[in-house]
Image (tube, rainbow over all chains, first blue to last red):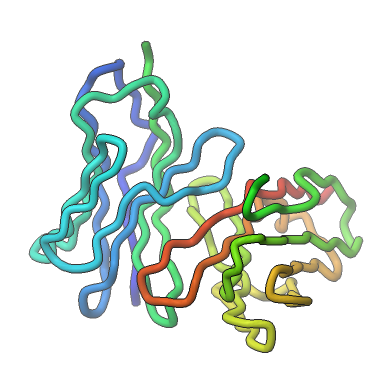
Amino acid sequence: GNSVTQMEGPVTLSEEAFLTINCTYTATGYPSLFWYVQYPGEGLQLLLKATKADDKGSNKGFEATYRKETTSFHLEKGSVQVSDSAVYFCALRGGNYQLIWGAGTKLIIKP
Amino acid sequence: DADVTQTPRNRITKTGKRIMLECSQTKGHDRMYWYRQDPGLGLRLIYYSFDVKDINKGEISDGYSVSRQAQAKFSLSLESAIPNQTALYFCATSATGEYNEQFFGPGTRLTVL
């Protein structure tokens, strides 16, 4: 069945460091892929998405490329800020338009 | 005002009690969802509804029931709460369409003693 695997957290970085959060998936066909972010005390919100292979989603300085050959959708940002501290979830759209979620990766940015 | 609201935001209850969590949305979306979030497990779908007359079980529906009272309202009930239902519960909505994103409420933290 469909599944999403994310790197375990927490990931702790200094401000202005380069960020990569790994996400790989198992799915039939080529599902749409998403990154959601959950700031402390809030619900999840969509960060970026990609709907087909080789698409690059981007938003707020974050990027992720849909790589079908490696079944991956890694999240990257060139220079993180303290305000990026949050939990990041990778997800894919499974059957019947449901989202299949990774376990989440907590990101801590230190000033 | 928030587009997706949940009440209550926090609730502590005892084993065996009946609990209802409510969700309202002003986005005009047809689709609504209930998830629970547990540390290290991500989100798991409990129930979803594609319109008022359409209710579907998700991955972990046992011990839960739902009611879609109107397009804008979707309630989750725990008929007889148990401690392993202690979790953070989220309601979400989405418009009809394959790529439409889900919009989440702020969550309800439920503790069952």
